[in-house]
Image (cartoon, rainbow, N blue to C red; front, side, top):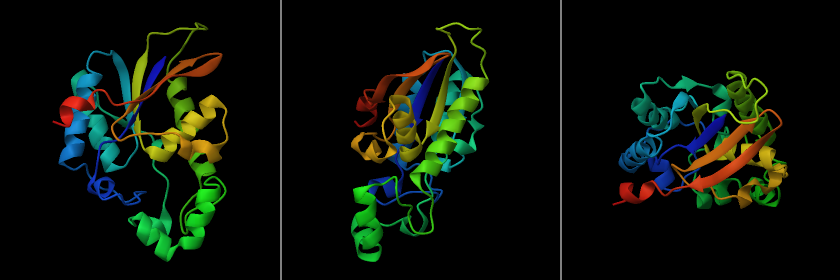
Amino acid sequence: MRLYLVRHGETEWNRQRRIQGLTDLELNETGRKQAEALGRALEGQELAAVFTSPLKRARDTASAIARFHCLEPEVLEGLRELDAGEVDGLTYEEMREKHGDFLDKWIRDCSAVAPPGGCGLPEIQQHAWGAIEEIQSRFSFSGRERDGTAAVAVAHFFPILSIFCMVLGIDLSECRRIRLDLASISTLELIPSRTVLVSMNDTCHLREASR
């Protein structure tokens, strides 16, 4: 099957470049336009299901996609964003001032340290990959290498990056070297023998939304 991994649209904290973990913000006006553009970009695909993180920004994005297919988004807890703990809502400058020791460790190896009061990337990867396995288990491949089923999973920055690391077999500490824009589409091919990363961080559909 083909799985489209979508990062949610913009919120005010994204616009302000604030750390955004489990704080449950809605999409802003730009984010709503981005979600509509995502829906139109995926309108021509025959989707069997739309899955989403439980957070509003992801659910609103998923709803905009699902509307074109007469589907109701299904919440998967494993797609939830990293719990940023005490740094949630801070700008980079504020984090440097209040949690400089954590930030230095995070820059050295983001997989080896958790935000104060939050959770670490290995836990996020475990949950996110569990969501991928759950999605894959919903559909029978009957031993075929190719299957026509397609679905969407709307998630967040760190869950999607952790999935990329798993698929590509690279260390989780390297995840911050991968670019992942808001409202981007990445594509996985889930087949019995392996998972293939078909495309990454496609934002061509946002050209009209930005006008």
